[in-house]
Length: 354
Ligand SMILES: O=C(O)CCC(=O)C(=O)O
Ligand SMILES: [Fe+2]
Image (cartoon, rainbow, N blue to C red; front, side, top):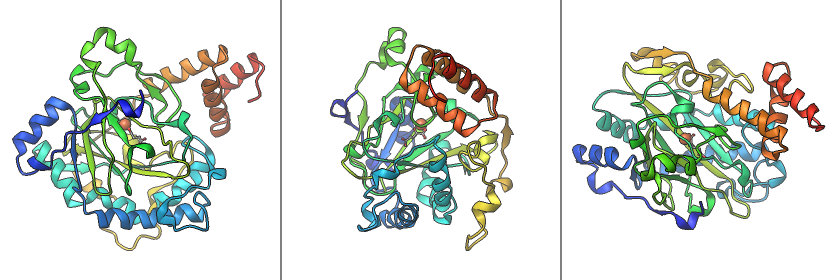
């Protein structure tokens, strides 16, 4: 899908105070988009903190204002690469990064939509995407395969700064949540590593054959959608700009939360504890806040990821370059694991270096 083929989001600022109408739109269209729901100054203040870290770790050029987000492409890396995680942890330790999802404008909106108290999940994410690294663009997926827990959960996506279409904001397939089930996901590169084959789905769900929607996001703009809405990122096709965004997730009080959403993001690749995250924080109010709110922690289901990995093994055997890249990553990141052993065996079989 090319960006030009996208239509514009419906903007729901007109209905901000009309809860039945907001719920109607969410039920009908599978997303809600608001301009400047969060005070842009707060978003830009977080951008200042994050870009300062990104410059320190060498992801931004040294001779420009970090706020411009001009990438040093020689440092190019992505999720799944060890150097990505080392730097990402420095972002992850920022108190301001963990504070924004608690902003009353966000929590207030989620609670209106859910009609009950909401818990921001502590394991929220920043996505930091280098320019022209487009094979690693987040592929189309439903969030349930990654975040699990409850189907009542809401995702909230927002850029940390302006994010016009060429910088690669999120796009949504409107109405796609009405499939009412988790669709089959396949191996892919990009965040989450799993993709829905839309052609395969359209054969049985012709209602999915609709134009994607997106917009030129500005700081403070916010997109909400439920766990079954199909979405993807657009590629960052800018010359030199880094794309920074947040994925915040909210569950209703008392609902299931998958255990991995209660730990810092991507600890499976490089462990980091909450104590390490909290080390330099100035205040205590957000430390372990979810423990005081009623919820049910349930184990993570690995079946979706395992299916994707099994497909990667098969694809690598046919010489698929993306699959080979994914297998090499597995070998590098978890060399002692069963997956790495299986990956090494396939790479040897096809005569390729691990
Ligand atoms: O920001 C992105 O590229 C990915 C966001 C997303 O869809 C997710 O985290 O589930
Ligand atoms: Fe997602």
